[in-house]
Every structure is written in C-alpha cells, then in structure tokens.
Image (cartoon, rainbow, N blue to C red; front, side):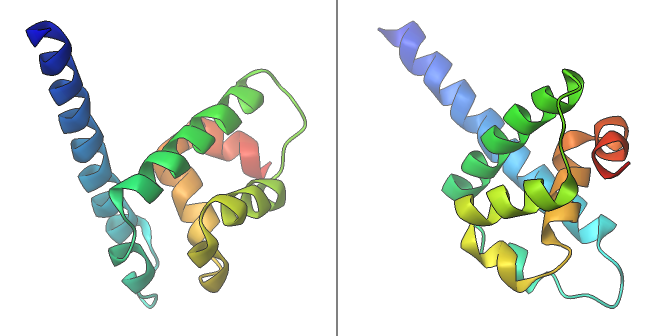
Amino acid sequence: MEVILLSENIKNLVDRLDFIEFKQNIIFLKPPQHSTQLFYEITLEDFLKIRDFTKEYSLKIENEELVSLSDFEKKLIDIWQPAKSYPLSSSLIARVLMGKNLYARLIS
C-alpha cells in the first residue's frame, strides 16, 4: 500500500515539474511582443489533458500519419478552449511538448 502511495506521489511531482517546465518554456519561446497571460491561467488539469493529447498526436507524426498544424490546433481547442483566443498558442504548445524534430515534421 505504501509503495502505491509513494508511486502516486512521485507521479504527481513529475506532473507538477512538467507543468512548471512547460510554463517556463512557453515564456522563453513566445515572441517578445506577445503576452503570455493566457498561459498564466492554465491549470495543472488543463496541462495534463494537453500533454496527453500532444503525446498521442506525436505518435501519429512518428507513425507518418497525415497530420497538420491546423488539425492539431482544432483538436487542441476542443480540449482547451482558451487556445482559440491566442493565435500562436497551438504552435507554442506543439514546439514545447513535441520537441524540435516532431514539431518540424508537423509544420512541414
């Protein structure tokens, strides 16, 4: 029982660290003239849904399925409505969570 609790606590810590790192990377990658106010309001629960979706979408890219940034954006908005209010949100999220190589394949 203690092992399960410890494992769950570790998972929660990793999720929170991923969330903090995500927010930090968004701030570093956004164009200087753009605000990141939208991303200040994102919750851990929102982030986890976005991360899970992005992982699934990354697998599609790796499997060479037909994908596009506009499709990614539409599905992201279905998961997290505020993404609609900031035009670069889907691109920033993809860059941060997919990494350089998969992001490059997504936009090519």
